[in-house]
Amino acid sequence: MMNKNTVLGWATFIMIVVGLGLIALGAFKYSEVAGWGFASVGIGFFAIAWVFNALKGRV
Image (cartoon, rainbow, N blue to C red; front, side):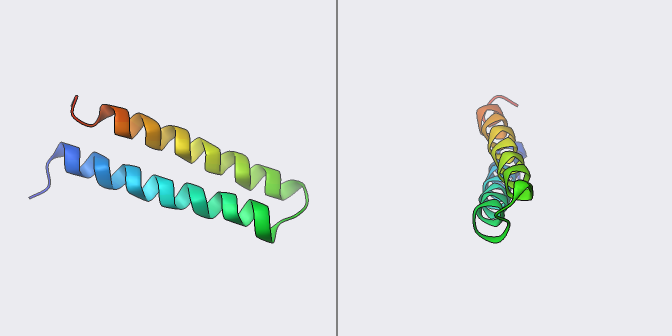
């Protein structure tokens, strides 16, 4: 069974994967201004994943 910490762990992992995907899209597929937007949103996903990881064990 999944408890709250397991759910937060999976959410952190998924957010990191999506963030890496967005940064990769910004770096390799879109070389114009849209790439900067993709990369900044990917960094935002990393920030949210960091918060999820910090909440793990406290909830």
